[in-house]
Image 1: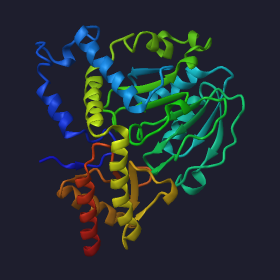
Image 2 (image 1 turned 180 degrees about the horizontal axis):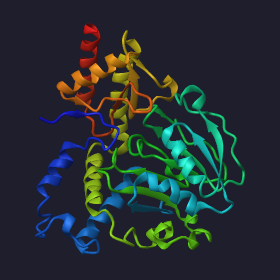
Image 3 (image 1 turned 90 degrees about the vertical axis):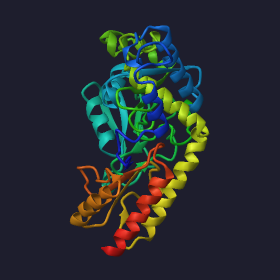
Image 4 (image 1 turned 90 degrees about the horizontal axis):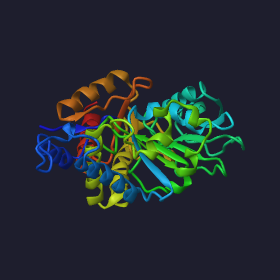
Length: 356
């Protein structure tokens, strides 16, 4: 029996995608082999690779002057690759809205001088700052658009003027409509809304590829290397890209990002409406900045929270523990989480509350 998986990542994948991948596991498209066995330079694999990029461009409305890269190392590797590649003046602004933003800032500070343009740490990262102290000649401004641990999200792109805006969109990409042209660089680990773990997506404006300092980096760490080679400088994570292609096809069939945003908003409303009227549970993020994807909450009692997780798992509602840094509970509701899963969770919470 499949469970409803509320994991923050690796996260649930669409059942249709898993079934399609299962059918093609041993042999893909009558070619006599699995995608995992193909040369990454073969014509058949290149069709997969190019289709994945084309679908991502279509779904996100990526302008022609942006390159799409499929890279290894996850989003955490981008914490270092971004300052390495965008370093011109030796300084960058970071907006700190949670643990992952803090980690990105810490890694960048090993390479250039970072400046905290704003932080929400004063209220336990439960909100998104709206006033910023940007550095006019910074090489870039970095934000984390959706915060998985504290459950907040930016409601739009902050205005950074002529300074490129860089966004970690790992947990929010493809969940709601956004304007790529407002960003210089977008990056995301795949394992939440794009596909399985193993590949990271980087969407970078072409002018940011031209950097004398970046040209001095080891070849494999230069964005330009991967842009010039269509992400085939070295062997890419081919099977993860293939599965990402299936997920992107699934998303297109659901009405694209516009269609899934409506579903995501309805799922989040269902859950938040219950939280706001619950006598036992309460949400942790401030209402204005609540994430559509990650909802931390608590009963206010550690023992009760642990009992909740145990009982929920017994009825097929799994991975509801909060992050180890903050405790409590958390429900991650990425694109692949069906509405029925959220409905079952809310019904279980109502029953749990009655018995508490």
